[in-house]
Image (cartoon, rainbow, N blue to C red; front, side, top):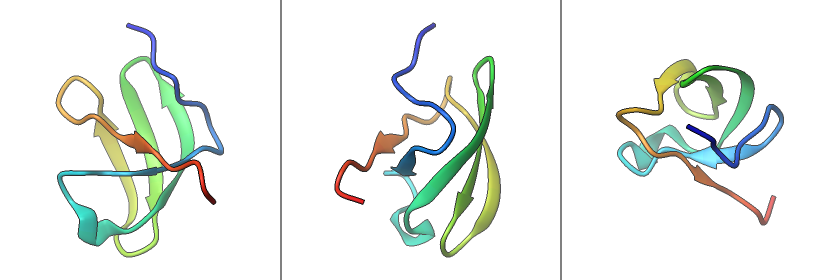
Length: 57
């Protein structure tokens, strides 16, 4: 599966808006590590969560 995301991109988790904006740290297969403003570092499984890219950062 191909995603339009790469390390350094800014994203939000629409399932957890309170986490704030996060920056992608790494991507390994379907697992993305994101450092969020309000929730720190999280490992997201893209099979279950669709992150939304933030373009106006």
